[in-house]
Length: 92
Image (tube, rainbow, N blue to C red; front, side, top):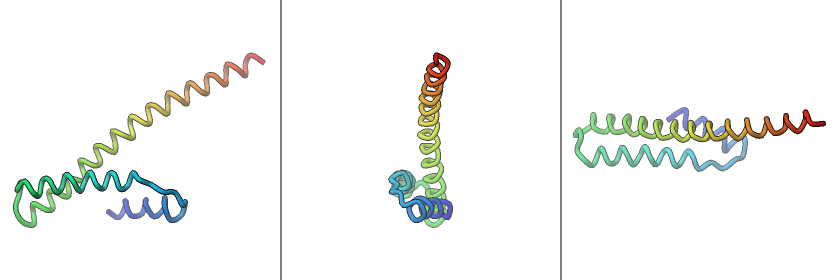
């Protein structure tokens, strides 16, 4: 939670950018934790702790998937753009 608060502080407070990714991934983790708590997977205090940990792991996995796919797309676009610039530069 501390890392999430620190990154949100840097993004919104220092840079002045609005971010919806933090809210989206927090809601994914909270929804997973709520489903595990409501299902009665474990009862009481240990059930809440396990639900929070599993919710964080699920949000992390989904976040990693989104990062990986966007990184692959960006890398392809960047390589295509750079190669087109290099071809145009060599033609002069």
